[in-house]
Amino acid sequence: MTNEMNALVKAHAREGLWLQTAPLPEIGPDDVLIRINKTGICGTDIHIWNWDEWAKKTVPVRLITGHEFAGEIVELGRNAEGLSLGQRCSGEGHLIGNQSRQSRAGKFHLDPETRGIGVNEQGAFAEYLRLPAFNVVPLPDEIDDDIGAILDPLGNAVHTALSFDLVGEDVLITGAGPIGIMAAAVARHAGARNVVITDINQTRLDLAAKVADVTPVNVTQTDLNDIQAQLKITQGFDVGLEMSGNQIALDQMVEAMVMGGRIALLGIPPGKSPVDWSRIVFKAITLKGIYGREIFETWYKMIAMLQNGLDVSKVITHRFGVRDYAEGFAAMKSGHSGKIVLDWRTI
Ligand code: NAD
Ligand code: ZN
Image 1 (spheres, rainbow, N blue to C red):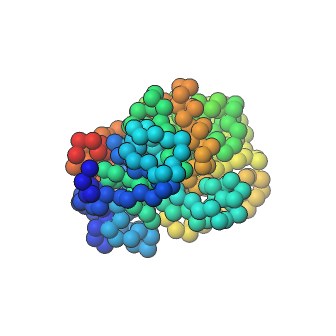
Image 2 (cartoon, rainbow, N blue to C red):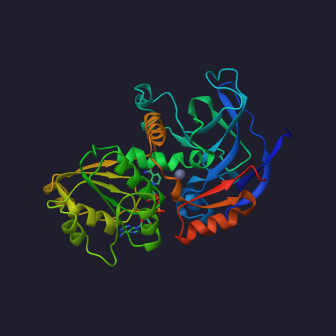
Image 3 (cartoon, helix red, strand yellow):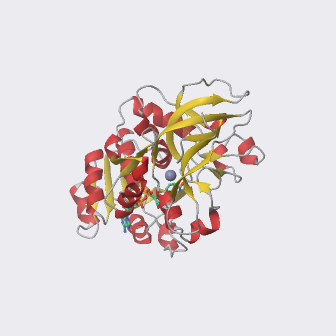
């Protein structure tokens, strides 16, 4: 091993990412070094590529981006227990502290000191990644590197979908992006009666129907009320999963919910947006904000579901060698893709 590697770096304070050499990460006693096999491109990476207002105030220049990955352990810190060299793994990209009340209560995903790899700390779009051993999630043989590379967003979908009991329930998902589509597959797997997914982008709705047994609805063409009538959903949806970050979608969801319905919110609106609070109050709706994945319960559940038949493989629509990363980012920006996986072994 030389002491340099290739990485996708935010090397300049402007649009783009650059494939450059970077120093090989040095690991501490509590870390492991992971050789990256595959990575997934996330919407967050697009914000960083675009260098929008959020990225400018959050991301340091000369940061290695990326947080969705699968690879294998090539070096172990001396305190890294229960892991072995050659172990295939993915991992939790949220690095938590151990000082907050939440952490000390074991609610690691609620730690306010969380730092993200590829956002605040050196990331996974590289040949090698340093990760605390605590964050490593071993991959069983039946989960390949492509799926391993999208466990982070699948985890967002699982965390959101499993927030409320779905068995026998009618579920409305707004936003058929990769996460909404995977949440639809999870809701179906978990025993929902009807799963309806909305979008304004027909390509994505078509993809949703390929990935999961769901009712896709293009809200620019079809009235959601008609679909409810067809499905004999008489009083409204029991559970809503908001996965678009779009205000109109949230309004539509609140309207379509049953009295006492429950909504989990994953989508991130671009700024402050008006909400019809009295409607939410009078419908006695429960709202739950979702951030990241439950560490590590979401990982446990999603791996278990993948092992017992959950199949989200078709959500991956494009695969590129890492040298063609610009094509991957362009496909992602086009809105005509699901998940995009970059292969680091071909470099
Ligand atoms: P995405 O942007 O690929 O998908 C959002 C989808 O919503 C798009 O297909 C878009 O066409 C659709 N949409 C827009 N307006 C709509 C409307 N009026 N009705 C229905 N659909 C509409 O995003 P993604 O990667 O699938 O992620 C989903 C959301 O979750 C995003 O807002 C993302 O920022 C957010 N997110 C949150 C967390 C978290 O921890 N809270 C983590 C990851 C992603
Ligand atoms: Zn992500």
